[in-house]
Image (tube, rainbow, N blue to C red):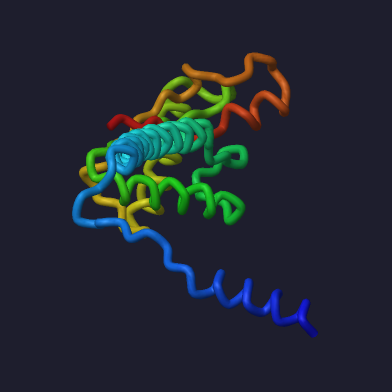
Length: 173
């Protein structure tokens, strides 16, 4: 019983002991250093965040410029399978008011030069109309035709011709 009383008395004394009071109106020097370090880290964090945002935007733009809309032989209507590609392009262009996209219409080597230029133009115009329907300003779209002059592949067979019947997106900010 005596042991319990001694333990209780020790606990009571510990519980009632007061801690030293700190004057919060005058921050200590170590607090000043911590505040300064936190400010620097917030500044670096903001700079790092901006750097990452710009890098992500550049990466997104590079990915968009690698996209193309492909067409069937002697056709210039945008196929359903490329609607998402056009939508992605439209979303980017609308969110970047200073962006101007050039739609480069291309054709494969079959047909006359004049015919292929006209077909490339119809393909670029078809994509332009799709972008306009999705709310892209006409001021942000330019359509050109290269006909057969900018082939992606140079062989003379269907796999190359499929790759050359396309519209490419070239963004300028």
